[in-house]
Length: 500
Image 1: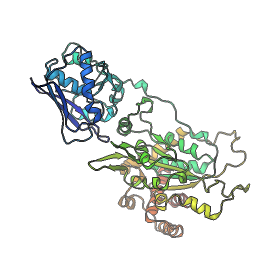
Image 2: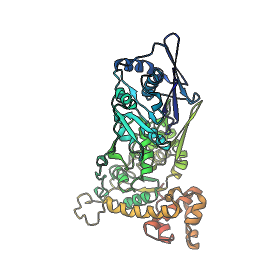
Image 3: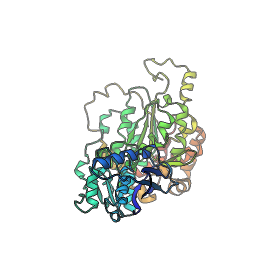
Image 4: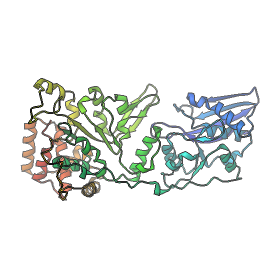
């Protein structure tokens, strides 16, 4: 009998390496063995496949069946994604379906005992990899919308094993899937106009959005810090298709239900302060992305920053600089992207009312120092902007004059214009400039250099903070449509580094 080869893919981080399912049927005592480093779920597929074939009136060969998942040295072949290709390999090797029709397809899907196809996780990376070699993709119908976000790829969804077999026999072809763009949501984000007062904080939020800068807000409870943070995605530029695909691919491998209404919208992740370091950066066996990767191309908001475990916060230091995270295990490594914009909020003291005019704060100097010491200097140094969000003045909440209140759409238009200047100039946001690029793009006059050096010495700022102030000044100049950084741009940038 012939050797049947069916093409599929494994899951490795956000990649989908190719796997060839080789099925050979030979004479001997009835048995089925799967080799090639299969995980437990793959080993169990032989029982699911056997029941699915028998329940769909196919013959399960009573011979020796050997299934090899090649390449054999590729670890972590996991999940039920290989059920469908294994079943098709057995049918092709036993001449129940033509084996020469399998070459142009890649298959994935978990089989129910009845032969129905169930969805799998990590479909988007699978589709992206399939597109590169120009094969047709046969998958469960519930994965079709997600896979079809990849343009110029032939998606053939199926509900049942029988539908796939009749297609391969040429009896009834599977219909190509078309993604309905009307499913994309146009619902407006939370609007910045909802936040009363706090004009200084809104200005800082606009600058942070324009240059993709990190932001720390310090203020007493109830001053609008969380409201401001939650409205940041609404003033950020819309994601490109490439960014959307990468972000969606990360959510896909986590097994999350794909929501078309989130397409091209930047993610906003706000983990609770009890989150562990593994929940934040990722981990497990096999490794899965953490919150910083789920916030890729979006916003990671850490409310009540000092309440996080200090060791948990320290794991953010490297991803903030590199834009990715590498999770190492004894036999392999998994790398996940983590290009996120960090926004954090905290109280000025343990009770939150430091400097309150009503005298509600009774924290000692030592208590305040211990509270702020929960956040390390190196982590604070990596957050570009530090601002104070004070209590609202009397009457601010009941103000009815809305003429001076700006909406998110108006602020977004300025942010998009500034970001387009940055992309045209250096093809990336200002926050990601390296030292040599800062020297070239963020030039100062002689007087401004003296001003910055004096401020750096007086505030005790590091070399990293020095460069971050220059990047912020460059962003303010971009918002002002200025070719050069002026004194007022530098002075405003310095005002966002002096609080902590």
